[in-house]
Length: 247
Image 1 (cartoon, rainbow, N blue to C red):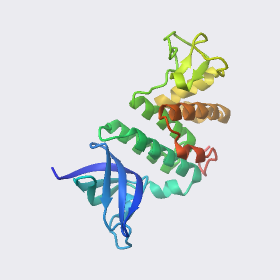
Image 2: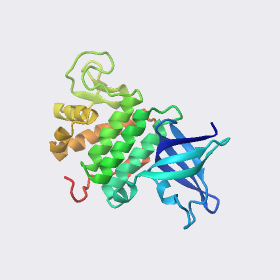
Image 3: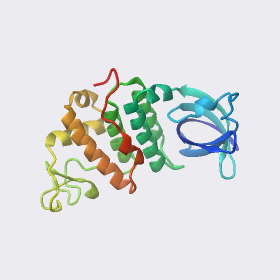
Image 4: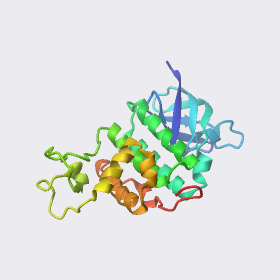
């Protein structure tokens, strides 16, 4: 069908001409979609504000040869304003949509869409520390993409744990025999926190000391950036500073 409708979260936008934008979005049923939104940069545009990064919309699109065309957009989740008002939430959201953009394609699953929408919703409401929401998202979306870190048995030889070395390049924890020389030790409580981040055990995550969450964040960042092959540029700006109402 030349015209189709879907739910989508806006990942990024680029200017096109004097009044148009190219909108990159992750949709629920059609994966990643790039479409032209005509006239949305004019003040008279009826749906320009609904096609900004971090927003979730019900969109109607017309299939084009190279780029689709946005015909309608109805807001489903206005998360952008609340996210942009807090630096920690804003930088975390940018890292999330950048990762989603890198991992998604036309075959992206509905789970990837739902995971991103859930993360942006939690950020907008300040439900947890922004960096923890980001870390949980990164681990879970990497797992959905087939890159789940090994946190129990050795990632290289499969020897049952517990193990105290974590090597991002090898896929997670490794035994003493497989660990490269100079590999740093990782505390069991840090590995336990990583398991909670993947499982979404927020009572455990929210109660963890800052030192433990910071150690876990370092491992998550190293792991995600190694397996994505290129650095996630937005991670350099992610702040540990928490906004009002958060720990």
